[in-house]
Length: 199
Image (cartoon, rainbow, N blue to C red; front, side, top):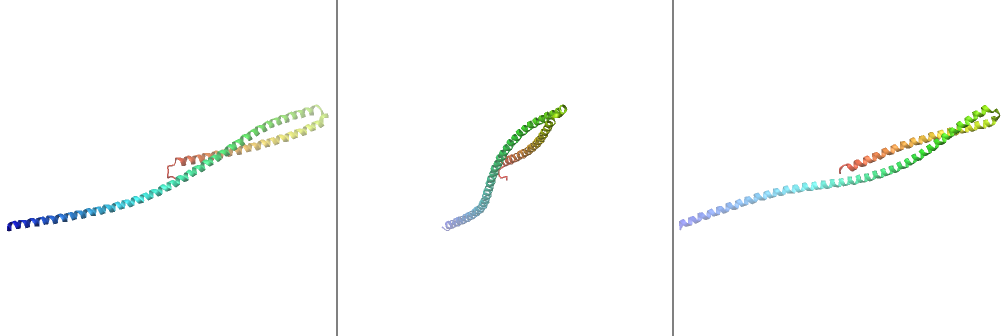
């Protein structure tokens, strides 16, 4: 009985030691796992905070990009309006130029006719002076008429010069308007071809 009791006691002590050892190991394992979970949780919270900051920055950037796009669209619309206005002014100027050219052509025709009339009258005056001194009075009248026609001729020449100046001014205006249209179209093309986000 003493031997059996001693064996049982030894067995119980052994089981108790194993039980204590197992409990201690499990406790250490759970403590280690809890520490790992806490560390992972801290890392996840840090990453989550970073993601929130990144999301906030991305939203802010998106709002700025939308504002820039809206501003760019407004600029494009204004540029289109300017192009249409300049095109209308160009059409009006070309119409004025066409009218001025027609007036110049008519004035040149009148000038040629006046010159022909002056030449005819001068020849007539010369013939009258050579053939008959008795027609001096009539000759004086013709000379007066000749002077009037010469004055008319000078007036027509001045009118031609004025019309030429107007044509030069209109041509210069057309060139400026064409340059303005090219500039507006280049700005519009550059804005439309620029990537989003570029001011």
